[in-house]
Image (cartoon, rainbow, N blue to C red; front, side, top):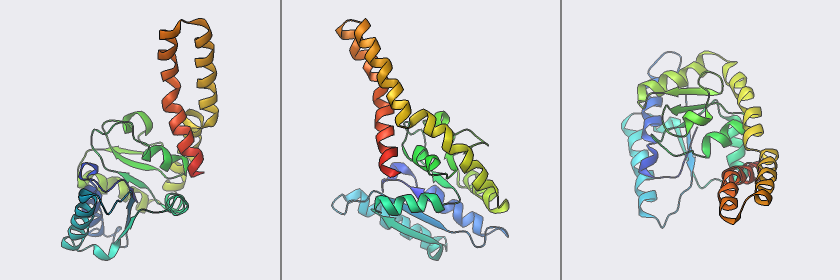
Length: 212
């Protein structure tokens, strides 16, 4: 599964090309890919990029193996994440990124480019795989899940608890408590700086809670 907004910078074509490479091998003949994410029909890039990805899938001969799901509901999003063998996160040098967190919280291991935010959130070989930003590297990582029936479940289970500990509501409560204590001890300006520490955790905790 790929989950991203339909924007060119997300480079979802890497996942489509990886699928095509995977299906040429003996073990990947039955592999398929769901491409889901935010889509606004009034945004030109969204419309164009969806068409480009559909054309790429057709060109590579995998159109019948790629399901496009723009603007899925939260409930469908959760079901897709929970059913995914893995989630391919294809942006390169992306910021922190909420998708790997959501995927691992849902119990889906992540295959991501070894750059940017995933370096902080995905533990290579334990909660997913970090790889070079090439279709071949993604295909190799995706193929591991096809070759080992228990790998997705094992890595998915290993991913859920650490994400819950670091980014769940309990983590937010701890950060908030620490910031509140700092606010009592520091002057106004340092207090503002201290408060910034829990803002990211709060946003992630709310997002995770909304998906649960």
